[in-house]
Image (spheres, helix red, strand yellow):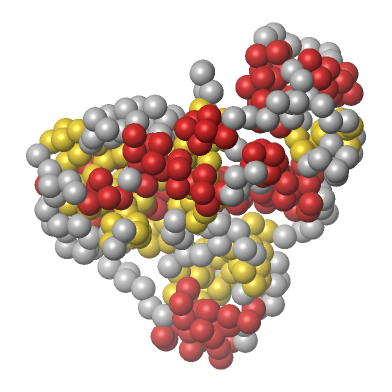
Length: 409
């Protein structure tokens, strides 16, 4: 496929005009972003990089269908969209917060420091807890498409109102209810890419006949498993099913959540519980996957900006007594972005650079933050990273080692 970016952009603009777009359109060549509008009647932005890649991979086939699927929401036609149609078709979509953070970093990589354009491209969303957020989608006959800021502005309906209506719409299409697949274990049987989002139906979930408070795991967008906090067999079943579901596409989050006073919070049973090890590993897999995805983008972003900053990897360990913990390395003389882990290994290399002779001080993340928190600058990413450059003095390191011991056996 040899279509140039300029020719592709023109093809997109021609398509939008044919579909009834009324506003003037122009390309920002340096960011490969299409701008529709002159600021008087609302301005929409569409970054074309992903669409161009998909177009090239398809050798230009079915371009109108591709454009309609990706660009329908930014078109401003003469006739306003019917408000009731909007309200009846909007739906909520739950995603892990790490996804939103990664999308923003990816936009920084592709658009540089153009913050206004990046802001305009981000999906408006509401945070449910430290791990999850919800955004809005609009149901088309053959697909469900995310709603951006420009679309909400053109409709003139506040995000909060649309979110309430979206949850009610989801409830109405879920009237068949959750299916009891095993005694005390329920699942969302719809497999319509909105199963994980049915965690938002908290009133319905709270009424399920469970042993104890509801515990939910939604490892993919097509799976949601629910059981009770006090149901030992149910928790083991959910853990096993979630582990198997992670092998499927459309990954979501394998962290277990507890419903408490209408709000989901991350949860694990006591270490003595037979399901603890598997649920802990599922949670860790989710966090490790998010950090790995984040590291890939940050490495590319830092390289493109000419910064020599090391993006550290999250490592996981299991002791002989089945303790599971995470760790990262803070190396003297190396500016780095550290993941948030259970343990930090402070490393000072010898002059010859032989890692076998390195000096290592290990402590918990909590103790490190208490002693040298001023050296750990949060980046604002999800999951969080901390930028470090200076290295603590040896007396401080020794104190941290004494206070921050992790299980070793």
